[in-house]
Image (cartoon, rainbow over all chains, first blue to last red; front, top):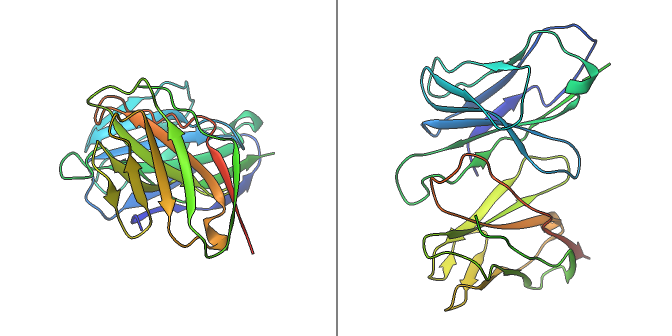
Length: 115
Length: 111
């Protein structure tokens, strides 16, 4: 089992609220990812990090922001949540060497509902 | 990344081996075959991957044909908890950040 954690698992909030979704991994992986996934649909990469202080936006435009101050921690923040942000948010990580390099390991996800 | 083709659904009796096929006839020489699964409402779970040799780990075995145009994921003793959508993807390690899963196979393990 991959050691990657996400909190909260479920979140219901009102429009306009600021939220932070937490993601932590204990595997020492350099690369971390945030995906958005709607039920039965494809994954969409929204943010990516090569390592500490390195972040990039993914292929899907997102109003969220991320930070990577520590290797193990990759939080995602929505400054003002809207109903269109309702989705499942998945965090993943991968290593840059070894037999399973570039294999992405996923956390359990945060299901966000914005009312 | 090469395209893959999987049957949309399969059933398997609990305790029996589940054999999930995947066709990837346009696979390139440097593309790996990866298998993931996703149980409803949970994050995808990595299962196994390989380049050309057969692979086995604590979860499953991966059999890749000699011409690498197809592969089979084997769950040796399926349990009810193995009910999930199984995705076969082929990609060059390190080539792209985005993982693209496709439609996958819905495996239902029956009691």
